[in-house]
Length: 134
Image (cartoon, rainbow, N blue to C red):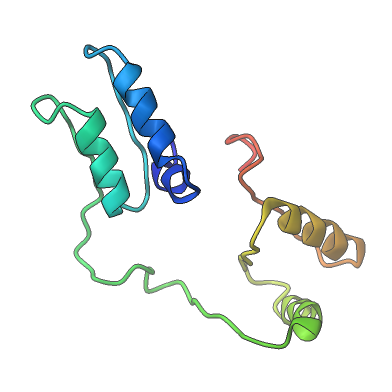
């Protein structure tokens, strides 16, 4: 199950528990999640046999989530000024690689189309795309 944390986050915990109870005892269960929340741990405990389980994680020597070569930041501004600010920022930083996050796939597609239309070349990445395209 991919994005197990998101599935639980949007309210499917009871449904998942019911499904897991109906599954055969002898099975292969895989849960994938970039974040390990209490809900994901509880689901893993319920659905995975601890005697045969394998956990894969990425070990890191640093306590920072962002690599030192990556600059990360955010801006808060009035909603009526957001697009103008984004447009200005992207125009001034045309030759840099920038990733902008939006709240939905539709918003990503809308802004990508709009920015490309006004000659700010961008690529969109969102969850409704096939993995190969992302």
